[in-house]
Length: 390
Image 1 (cartoon, rainbow, N blue to C red):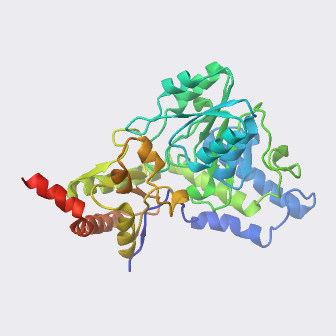
Image 2 (cartoon, rainbow, N blue to C red):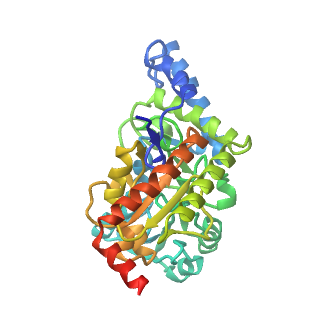
Image 3 (cartoon, one colour):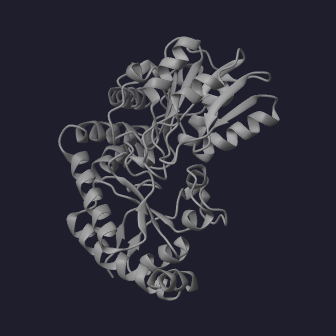
């Protein structure tokens, strides 16, 4: 059976070029990057080269890059590294759970948290950020692009608000990196999170950008690794892979690769909307990363559609991979005002550079057919259609 993967926002496969860059550091070049002998120094050189590659993607200094185990650790470090009991945090209601659950834990530790609402299109209003400021506000954390809808948040405006208020600003850019251009100076953020496995690097490696001069408490203690900002022996193969992936991602922003993904996403989206009734895009009309579309197929259960499509060879998602198995509908879609039924009927299609035009063609063939079959079994859909026929 033909298999098509359109769940890149959950994870991406390691590109062959990335794997080849990593390969020597599992075997021959296995040194500890903290050792002073040649084995160690060879590893250190590779780590610093990767640091430069990631810095180029973010348009920052290499010394501002801290390697972590992934986006979750980076988000947690940004929050708990800045805040203390009595401080105030401003975040949004549509953040990834790595931020939301950390914020909830921060509340238990005596930190006040304001969870901002979003519009029906999934956008945070910068004026809401401004109005939420308090004398004790120490951190604003608003994601750059939502992992479920792909909607891009007004982070530059929020960055200016943070600067005027002299408040630290963190943005989770896990779903933005490699899909849109990122310039930390233009954004005005003090901290930024990135995860390797969302841009064709391996799982288990990430980055926390920390603007020079930003004071924070490390989350992990031990050795003096990462300039005493994150203890633990460096994951050299993972770091090398992330560096190579960042280099490829940066090139993709100018060589047409990202644009091609956007064209395929648009063709998929337009084709599904044209072929299926009672079908809408969540976040339509808002700026979105080019690879993501979140579509509500009304009057059916999204989980059933995910399974039906998987049986036909197409892998998509009902929402965030971190919420897989949850019986609750997406907190993002609920925050956007969707009914529980519509939230449960929504699926995310997220493409990567490995998807082809043929993948889109096949998806346009099987998705409408699967939706039609499931609706035939839905008493709700039958009732709606009967009432519409009157």
